[in-house]
Image (cartoon, rainbow, N blue to C red):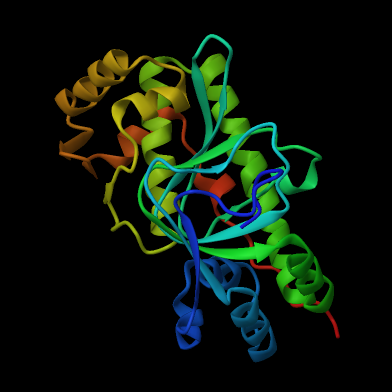
Amino acid sequence: PASMAGRDRQEGLAIVRNHAASSIRTHPLITKLNASIPLDEGDLAALTRLLERRVIAKKAKDIIVEGYEYKVLHVVESGFAIRYKLLHSGKRQIVNVIMPGDIIGFPACFYEYAVFSVTAISDMSLHHVPLDDFADLCLARANIATALVWFAAREAAIYAEHIIDAGRREPLERLAHFLLEMLIRLQAVGSASEDRFVMPLSQEGIGDVVGLSAPHVNRMLAELKRDGLIAMTGPEVTILDRAALQILGEFHPTYLTRTPIRRPKR
C-alpha cells in the first residue's frame, strides 16, 4: 500500500486476496455499522468488494507516519494499534487505541500530510482500501455513508474525554475512566465479556493515554485492586465493582453508544 510519499510498499505489510467473502456478516466493521443502521444485501455486497484485499501488519510496524502523505484507508479486522503524536522531547501522547472494526486513515487521508502516526501494537489483519474506492462507496450506498458519520462523532467524543482526563480528572479517576472505556469498546466488537477483557496496552502505553508515568500507572492499578474495584491476571482485567468504578471515574458510556439511525428514504 502507498501509505507514505515516494514508497510503493511498506515493510511489514503485504497485500493478499481475501477469499472469505462469506464471512462479511461477522466482520467487526459490519457489527459496528449494523448497530447504527440496518445494512441490506446491496450494502453487504458493496462492502465485500471494498474489503477484497487483506493487509498483514506485524507488531511494532508503522502504518501511518506523521508528516507523510497518506491516501489509503485500512479497515481493522483483528489486532490493535495506537494513534499518537511524538513530541520533540521524546514524549508520546496516545490520542486513541485502534480496535477491530475501526478505520485507520481518519483523519490522515483528508490532509496533505498525516497529522498523527499509527503503529501496530499487535499483529494485525487489515483491509487495504484506496481512498477513491471508499469515496465511491459512500456516494453509492447512502446507508453506509450515514452510518459512518457515527465513526467521526464517536472519535471526537473519545478525544474530548481524554482531554478532560488530562486536564481535570485526578490520576485514579483517569485510570478508572479509561478501563471502563476499553471494556465498553471491546464489548461492542465481541472482544470482552460483561466484566472482563484483555488490555492490549502495556502500563507504559496506558500512561501515554492518560498522561501518567508507567510507575504511577502501576501504583494506581494497585490501589484499584486493593480497593476491590478490579482484579488483574497478567494483561487480563476483571471489573469487580463496576458501579463504584463508574462513580470514581465519572464514567457515562453514552458517548460510546449510539441511537439507531433510521434508514434513508430511497
